[in-house]
Length: 69
Figure (cartoon, rainbow, N blue to C red):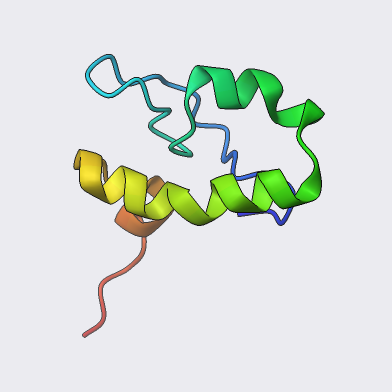
């Protein structure tokens, strides 16, 4: 995840939760992203992992990580 955007180029909206399956943002957040200041972006990014976990959405970068032996 970049410090400036959580986008990982997996841009598919989940119809059940209205969250992006790649980053966990909503369409309004994605649309406003370039107009948000750094503090607002960081506040949204701090919510994303929990938001995706609460929705039962596996984060792609974590799902693809190799399992420890």
